[in-house]
Length: 179
Image 1 (tube, rainbow, N blue to C red):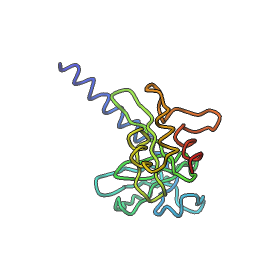
Image 2 (image 1 turned 135 degrees about the vertical axis):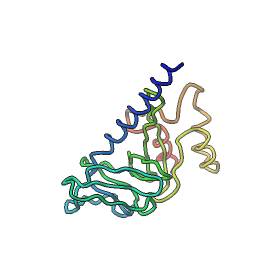
Image 3 (image 1 turned 120 degrees about the vertical axis):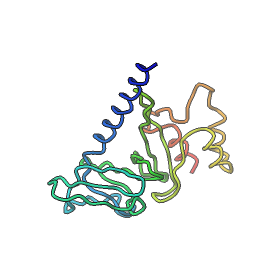
Image 4 (image 1 turned 90 degrees about the vertical axis):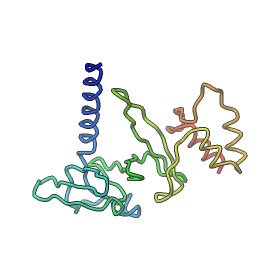
């Protein structure tokens, strides 16, 4: 029993290290969704971001300055590769696509396994919803086209399945077709 507990604690620690390393290559913070597509070459490059209960602490690349901001004042961050992440309800969501809907992804760790989940929102500042059958039925209950697509799915198929022809998930193809 003690061995299993030690193994579990090791994986929790490993997941924490991986998570902090993944967000350690941050280029800059984003304070408003209006700046989401800006490429800010003049800002001081951020080295690390640590998300605490009520604040976000950042360290700059040159190491000379550490700063904290209230969590509710930060919209998200952008990496050196200009990938944007939104902070919503104390979690970071990677912005995958910006069309009529905003598509996000988030890697969730369960022990030593990870799974990529998809989410959507109507705008950059609106509520984020999971991409699943139940949510789609609830959010699009008046959209006959979307409900038709859900009804045609086999039990083994998912709304998150990848559509190679359109380079996105099935749900986003449906949304474009139905709107």
